[in-house]
Length: 193
Image: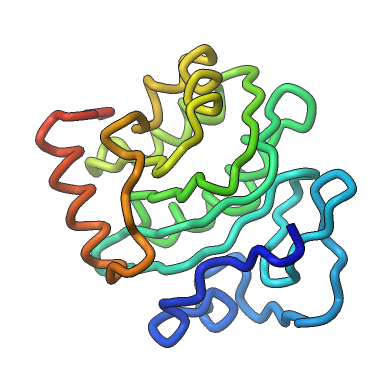
């Protein structure tokens, strides 16, 4: 896992460490110091920790005018044991919502497992953004992750499924990804608000 870097194709357009509104503003990265890990597997140092023990992210792109963020995740999302939803909401999402973000695009290819528990933080997240037509879309989930998300009843709060899987997002411009998802979600294909 130490060779898996977050997507870097948009770094000339956006860097979270240079964004004064980002929770990662001012963060410095090492190319050689591997400290974060998922279980016994070291992660590339470009991934950001936010308080979860086995889940990391990278804020790839944020547009405050259009009010969306694109996030890439890696690791195990474990609400049952580590309450990752709480850490994600309190340490990362709340600050973005406070700065006007209402649309969350989360790349899930690197999330190897999901263990659900309560839906409280997801319900709160949707309540915080739904008055402004906000949504949370999970792209390219593994099938077993989608099964667990559904069993935890998170399909009431998050948009995910076959229509959001298999998307080739890396060569696209971030604004194109947002426009495509906005059109898809607002036409009712996977309406969550």
